[in-house]
Image (tube, rainbow, N blue to C red; front, side, top):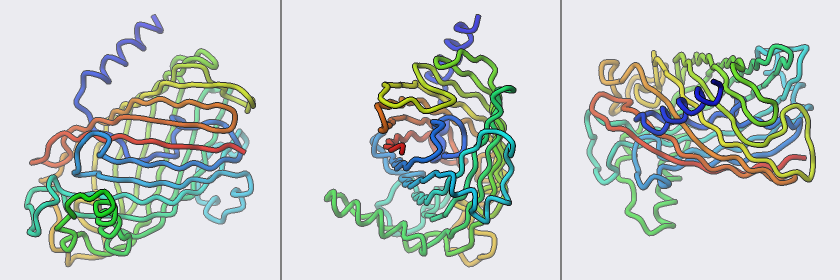
Length: 317
């Protein structure tokens, strides 16, 4: 019965047209329970042969027990008497319309936007109840101060591609302060080989206001509660989340600035989206590699589905 449920879930991932998720270093999906590590994530729709909407994401993540002294840690919710992982990350995400070959505004399309945030996060686990409670607070900026246009132009120049032409119309500078809370509960669990878990997630702040619910799976050969060196591990993972969007600064502009050249209004944004991702994690000794593909439903009324991929590399001390 357990494996029938898993097969049905895998088939739903393959057959649905779904929306991908931005870099997420809070959920247990990509978590290996090392107390100290460094990871680099890179998302790009180049992996799916496109250049639109969420077009690039870069994340540098560091986790260490010493980070529990971080003052922002006092604002985070987690199981304080259970196993915890404390971390920080620097994240840069870039968004463009469906075509970057126009100097004029493409009305009804995604605005040019980019944001740069510093995130403080904690993941915590209650192994007896097979649940995880994690939270994060992000502080940063959206707009030209995030240097999204300069980065995309530089990459296109290095690859001898045509430059993006519409960044002068990007969303203006504004402050980002956002809070994220994630609860996960195992539904099916075969230690070291299979996890099927439910997810509940909330985002609140000046970047995103949204609620998510969904399911995720891990299947393979992996270590859960401690670190075993000199051992090969692999995990095939997937995640499917249904989201309700109240507000999105990358489409609607920041909270404190109103003089944007162009933003989308509430009626032009799809309130309900479905997110799916499938990928593979491989670990050998202290090195972990990842590749994934993500598939997106429409995020805006006049938009289309959108796919992107990503890679990551981690080192565990």
